[in-house]
Length: 117
Length: 111
Image (tube, each protein chain N blue to C red):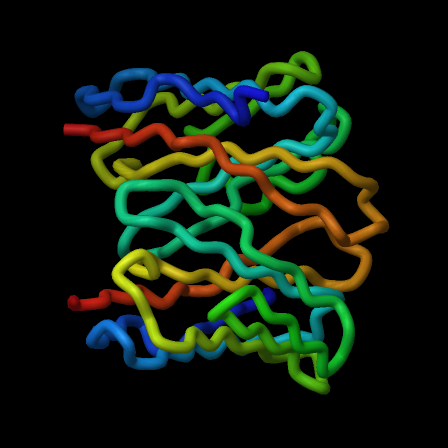
């Protein structure tokens, strides 16, 4: 199993540009999570999907951020327009299990390091 | 909203010394998980605790879940340089899939 695959690994862009981060979860996992990690704020949950449906997007910072999961094997996190304060490592994670079980273990991807100049 | 705090934020020990990190939640948890993130890496799952007062061991690592299910600890006996990294607890409220990560404790081990 290749694990959770994220791309790009690194992205440097200028303020105002659109950024799209991509994630391929582990096959068979029915939940997908997007986290953002910074020194100041730690690991923040941005949004998560269950069976491709967004369940909780309360962590999405503002309207500049959007996430989609068109099918079980692909998700995107888009920032438009990007700002320097969006600079962070963005992690995608997936898990298996039902919502009610509470026993889901997250498998993280390697992360996408975003720098907005 | 739910908050999960960890102390200390950072600890530097000599190889062979013990290490403990503490995790405290503002709400009662259905379960708690621990993850380790090596420098430059991504969080990797270590263990999950579910029952009140539960204690689990993995070699030199001992994990404990508090009786009230609002706190947890990770103790490492005789640290090694391979233990370097940031340790996160992550808690989940009953009935919700949302996993809230603690603030993390960064461990540095000198040989």
